[in-house]
Amino acid sequence: MRMDEIGWHHTHDAAFHNIRPEGAGDWLFLLIKSPCRVDGEAFPAGTMILYTSEFPQDYGADGTQYIDDWMHFDPDTDERKLLTNLQIPLNTPVTLKNSNALSKLLRDINFEYYSAHQYRQEVVDLQFKMLLYQIAEQITPPREAVSARLQWIHESIYRKPFDKFSAVRFAAELSVTPEQFETAYQSQFGITFADDIHRSILGYGKKRMLEAGLTAEEAAQICGYADTAEFLHDLTNYYPE
Image (tube, one colour):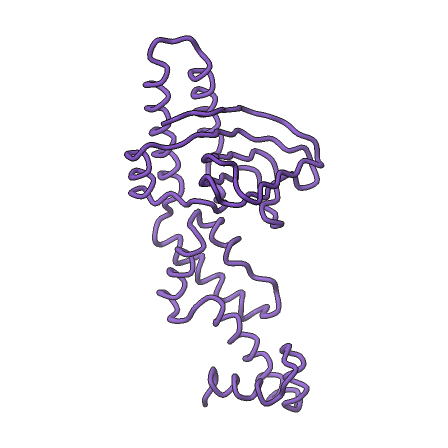
């Protein structure tokens, strides 16, 4: 691994906002230890992001002091293979179960890298691999827990069809990538996450027509349709009975 720079427990004020539209030019590992916003969305303390070199970055404080550990680096071929094998998400926020353990390891890497030790590079390489294994340990939830959480999300969509549900946020809660979340959701329910939200909204419109006597035009407006014919077409597709 080529280490470019590393920092531990750096603090910024509540106005901190870092935007790099073309990425940092090298890889960036962030462990954010305060409430934060990533791409405009709020995440809790203990959120990590592993950015690749040219991926756009947009992160910062969320109304309070911002604190993070960070590492600019470039992984070698073996380390990139390990990242793939461990299925560590890239370029997406992940909320960790125990960010303190990772922060302690980043502190050790920081001290070792800036030391005068004879074998500091070899030790840093080993510590980096330990970091990856610790991340993998934290982001692999039991299948039963994932299934139960997906069921709760599915039921919530039908209880509150007009809430703003986010695949990115749910994926972070489960410590998986949005793509992994979408795949797991479709596998469990036989429908994509976005289509299930659409179906729940149409179901609400149908219920209002049956129980409250709304016209198709009124139900279409409630469901966000400007065209009643399009609403009825979609309603028939999702609820053919």
